[in-house]
Image (cartoon, rainbow over all chains, first blue to last red; front, top):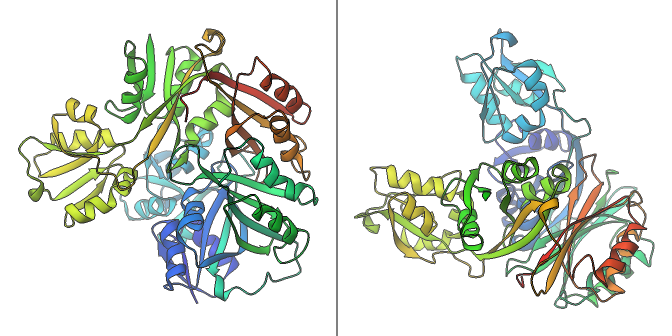
Length: 279
Length: 279
């Protein structure tokens, strides 16, 4: 089974993929969009892409591709991964000799207090991904360190100098497993289940429209775990909403809420019902 | 008056700033966050920063800085700018000789169909901003083109080869004018007015909490023009909401809705009431 993920090899996405689906053939793509379109177009059987991070928020490349450009796919599962950063060096490099720290700007920012305390004079260098940073440090003759994953360290010949160097504990990324809708059987497992719905209204400019939509869930006691607005790409002031709720779309009470929602909206689309990770 | 904006010189942010506030001294900052913090800390009197684009959605650097890190500032106004892209070259460069097109990846993406039709064999090269791209092309001896603003063309010695090369018309960016709260007098002008409110609930996990919050506006016939969720940066599943509505916070019906909202929330903060641009 071919599994598309956000590359290059050694990213958090590949770690998440291999944790959830250890027996697949991982294929790296350069964007979340390209990974999802590979499934939609038949070039891969499944994609694992980040959809939300507890600090950075929604991953717009994933949200917008699911909303606009990949009508043939569904969300078949979710994976929540604790984001923990490691400082990686080439074997033999001592921390006191390190002159530069390389990583994705978000990773550098998330470890800023550690770096200021432990490597105050090392230059910070931006890379396009944490995996690229580790590859760079593994190939460089300079005394450098990278912030990245353990998997990238193995791939690119670096060893772990320090673990858990992020400033804030509790950083988590939620990934979704994307498959062709035709390949998804009804939500599997014992539950609890979660459903992701997209909706947009012709009448979305009227006062109270969003309340009427959300009331379909509230009246039925359905818990919403997430709501996100995204542009409809027409002009400012036109949005669609992506909502996560507890329960499955093919059973009450969610099925009734979706029927009610259709009465208020121009477009309602279930992006998937799947086993909830609890996040 | 010192005005902070998202640099370098020649960006859409500087164009928006100079359109709205022609008599200020523009000071470029490298991030939206740094521009807002300059106002909060007293290093600048006003900042003009993008908050939303009709294709890309919310600008998280602006939203999160206003929500978490700049307690002393308010939104004092908004500016909506139509985003139109220009193809810029050094004087004398012919389009048929162009071997590479340089711009911010978003600008390259927004002009993809034009580039595929008119410059199918030119390499696409990413720059950190449209202004950097124009500066690069102005300084290069190579036959290159940049996608950028007319202002950047003037600054960096390039001329306009083609105008309006974006694939989708209607691309707009909304900027906010940020000032220290102590410097903002009550919302000025004849209106109509718009209010931006942040709210977050201790009880945000209970079914119906968001409906109860939004109902305070719906019951009073107040139109919501935007709602956006952002992480509270604790762990997944904890969000705050940023809401734009018609009307001003110091007059009914919005004042009453805010009183009602406080009854449901751990935190309610008015980020500003200001003249609406109509978007």
